[in-house]
Image (spheres, rainbow, N blue to C red):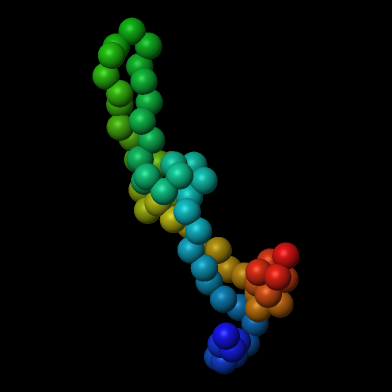
Length: 66
Ligand SMILES: [Zn+2]
Protein backbone atom coordinates (compact mmCIF):
# COMPACT_ATOMS: atom_id res chain seq x y z
CA UNK A 1 0.00 0.00 0.00
CA UNK A 2 1.96 3.01 -1.23
CA UNK A 3 1.03 6.59 -0.77
CA UNK A 4 -0.58 8.33 -3.77
CA UNK A 5 1.59 10.78 -5.69
CA UNK A 6 1.36 14.36 -4.59
CA UNK A 7 -0.25 15.94 -7.59
CA UNK A 8 -1.48 19.16 -6.07
CA UNK A 9 0.17 21.51 -3.61
CA UNK A 10 -1.58 21.35 -0.29
CA UNK A 11 -5.27 21.58 -0.93
CA UNK A 12 -7.71 18.83 -1.57
CA UNK A 13 -11.47 18.74 -1.77
CA UNK A 14 -13.46 15.95 -0.27
CA UNK A 15 -17.18 15.37 -0.13
CA UNK A 16 -18.77 14.42 3.11
CA UNK A 17 -22.40 13.53 3.76
CA UNK A 18 -24.54 16.41 4.87
CA UNK A 19 -25.14 16.32 8.59
CA UNK A 20 -28.48 18.06 8.28
CA UNK A 21 -30.28 15.45 6.23
CA UNK A 22 -27.86 12.56 6.70
CA UNK A 23 -27.35 12.35 2.96
CA UNK A 24 -31.03 11.95 2.23
CA UNK A 25 -31.20 15.34 0.50
CA UNK A 26 -34.63 15.91 1.96
CA UNK A 27 -36.06 16.44 5.41
CA UNK A 28 -39.35 14.97 6.45
CA UNK A 29 -41.39 16.95 8.88
CA UNK A 30 -44.55 15.78 10.58
CA UNK A 31 -47.30 18.31 10.84
CA UNK A 32 -49.07 18.17 14.21
CA UNK A 33 -52.60 16.93 13.78
CA UNK A 34 -52.02 15.72 10.25
CA UNK A 35 -50.92 12.16 9.67
CA UNK A 36 -48.86 12.89 6.60
CA UNK A 37 -45.18 13.68 6.49
CA UNK A 38 -44.14 16.72 4.56
CA UNK A 39 -41.08 16.49 2.37
CA UNK A 40 -38.78 19.48 2.11
CA UNK A 41 -35.41 20.06 0.50
CA UNK A 42 -32.61 20.15 3.03
CA UNK A 43 -31.63 23.77 3.76
CA UNK A 44 -28.10 22.82 4.75
CA UNK A 45 -27.01 21.26 1.47
CA UNK A 46 -29.78 22.62 -0.74
CA UNK A 47 -30.81 19.15 -1.77
CA UNK A 48 -27.36 17.97 -2.79
CA UNK A 49 -26.91 15.56 0.08
CA UNK A 50 -23.20 16.25 0.33
CA UNK A 51 -20.98 19.13 1.25
CA UNK A 52 -17.64 19.98 -0.28
CA UNK A 53 -14.92 20.37 2.30
CA UNK A 54 -11.49 21.71 1.44
CA UNK A 55 -8.71 20.12 3.41
CA UNK A 56 -4.96 20.47 3.33
CA UNK A 57 -2.58 17.63 2.68
CA UNK A 58 -0.94 17.53 6.15
CA UNK A 59 -4.28 17.93 7.90
CA UNK A 60 -5.72 15.12 5.87
CA UNK A 61 -2.86 12.81 6.79
CA UNK A 62 -3.23 13.70 10.44
CA UNK A 63 -6.94 13.00 10.31
CA UNK A 64 -6.33 9.71 8.57
CA UNK A 65 -3.59 8.68 10.98
CA UNK A 66 -5.63 9.59 14.05
ZN1 LIG B 1 -28.58 18.12 3.63
